[in-house]
Image 1 (cartoon, rainbow, N blue to C red):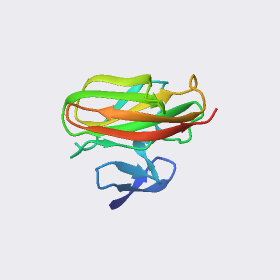
Image 2 (tube, helix red, strand yellow):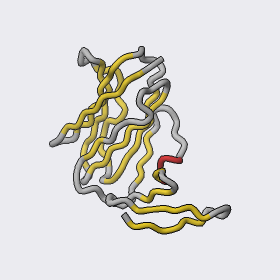
Image 3 (spheres, rainbow, N blue to C red):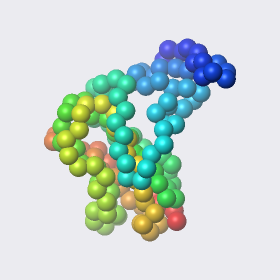
Image 4 (cartoon, rainbow, N blue to C red):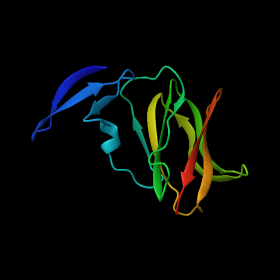
Length: 136
């Protein structure tokens, strides 16, 4: 990880560039300071990823909204869905073709009851899943 200083006009804060090419300022990803609308999708590309990844959602546990990040190495059809513990689909967050790179989606979970859920990223060839907990 390479370190450098970032001048934001008011002070100079340390920054670093992670091994995946993402710029980090004062311990936070630059992209994580962006504002999202419920169920909105934002593509953030700083370096083309070498493999399919599905990040842990944050915050977790979830009260109302959570952000889910994923990366795809090539243009492909993507679906990101949320399931309850019975395997029933409760939400579709992404459906369709996406460009290679890093993507984030904000999920509004305020209509779901408290409990454990799973989100699943599917591409043409691969699948990744993670658990999220909702606390109302």
